[in-house]
Image 1 (cartoon, rainbow, N blue to C red):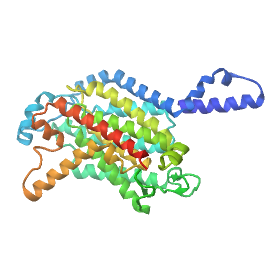
Image 2 (image 1 turned 180 degrees about the horizontal axis):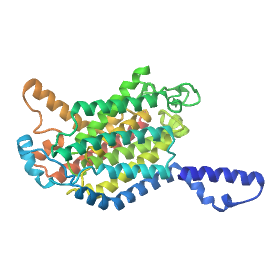
Image 3 (image 1 turned 180 degrees about the vertical axis):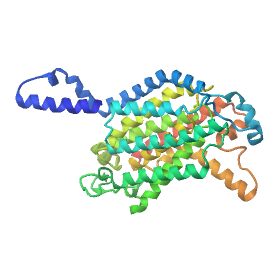
Image 4 (image 1 turned 90 degrees about the vertical axis):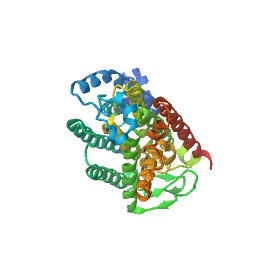
Length: 397
């Protein structure tokens, strides 16, 4: 809304100058502020945070009245962990609706919602959130921790990811296909949407053509599931989401400015990309607002509603900024959690031996004697350091 208010003001201001007759546009010169992405991004962060804080108690009370408590695995399934997490039984889940609604409200107010980058990331978040909601609802209704079957969930994740990936690949404002004036570029070297880049290399590492679509889908699905696996302790996934979103907000802002991207940092540039920083800062604000209630001891869990939505949006953001590989570093905690599960399952199936006490890896440390708060804060610190390290890589060459 603020973006369109600025456009209206800008047109009126130009008309008044041509007419030589000052009017309301000259009176409200302060509306010029709305053109700046930094201002709207900061405002989106504040709006999402305040909205989360305001609706939080009401949402929690409603979830409690609906008896949508989080079903926990039994002692037969998780052994000692059941004792450590026994106090969490009955804590309402589906709190991810707070995050999604806060982001959408802030984006509608502060961003240009028809910007292709904002649109695809917001829609991916909403679609993944809906899938997660169905999973949470099934768990709550059946009073089991199983939810939607793995195959069904993976199928719908694939459908969502392929639609988002195809939109990114074929939308000319993003890819440049059918319109040479748009798309990514790095100085005088044209970079297509089908290129895989990394800040340490001057040229794309690989160009996949149309086969980049399944690669994009893999990133969205992988990131969505990685955040879902990380969401096992109070505030863990939320805190890591904030640091990852903040880092990518900086990247999106820089990549959207021609001089900063092409002459200074030598990273892929697209003129429409800066607007994505508003979406990401809205996610940061929503994350802080949700953390208000989700910090230990949590009053509400985000559930798959929140974790799948966050993961899907972060995966989409990494693709849109052409920094897919950087997600391994900036979102390193999410990657570490997912890899620990893969290694644990692979080791047990092949050798009948476990590498960790329990996977994901945050449970390994918890069972090793770390208090839940220690695990959470230490993983947050790791996430902060990885985000800073990832940003530092952009100016090495």
